[in-house]
Image (cartoon, rainbow, N blue to C red; front, top):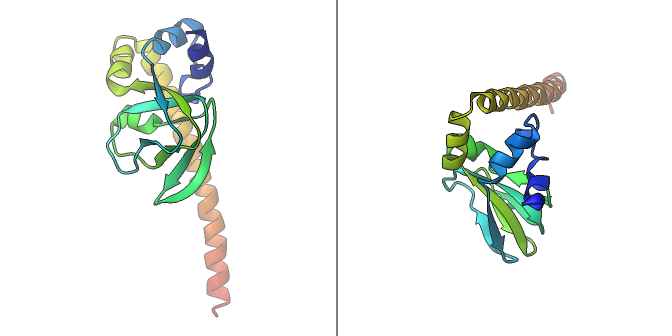
Length: 155
C-alpha cells in the first residue's frame, strides 16, 4: 500500500489532497499488469478510469503515430475519469508494465460523499483549464504571426 500512496500522491489531480485523503483514494485503485506490446487503452474507445504507472514504460500513440513515452509516476485517463468519454490516445506497453487504475464509479462515490474533495478537485480542474487556455492563446498568437507573414509575403 505504501508504494501505491507514493505513486498516487504525485498525480497533479490529487495535488491539494492531504495524507488522509490520499490514503482514502489509494484504497480505490487496483493493480494491473501488462506485457510488453499489450494495449492498455485504445484510442477512440470508451473509457472511465485513470491509470498511474508504477513500473515499466508505455508508448502514447495518436492516429497511429508515437507521441511520447510514459514512465513510472506518469498517468493517463484523467479526462475519462471525469467524463467517461472516448480515449484520446492509445497506450501500449513498451516494457512489462504495472499500473494502478481508478474507475470513475469508485472515484465518483468518494467525491460525492466528501464535499471538500469535490471542491479541491474542481479547483484543480480549473487550474488545468486555465493553463490550457494560456497555452492555446500562446499557440494562437504564434500561428497568427505565421498567418500575418503569409498574407504579407504570398508566394
